[in-house]
Length: 125
Image: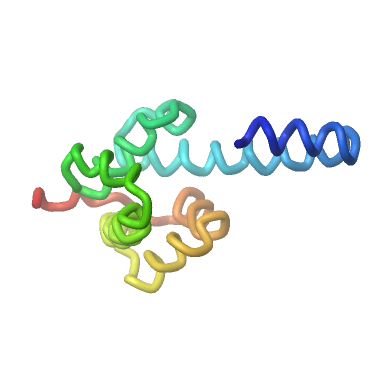
């Protein structure tokens, strides 16, 4: 999907649109990289598909098999909300921040990444 968007942007509106989208993607990767390193996980995991979801579950304190639930249609909506709430809690943020991460991740992930939030390992469930 990402390559389709990039290809359509590059062919439709020229190189300026392509560079803008590329800059947004790079910024998002850097933000997730910072969140992962704050949580003590490898930052490069942010750019590896599926492994980044595994790390996301691990940071949230959820078992690894939750990764499978993220690939089931409609079930993934509920479990992604739960993961966002758990990530917010792991960084000592409110449940409102967790909902913000779920709905507006392009705003709240950079706040989490570049802000003063510190990671506290969640208790195993």
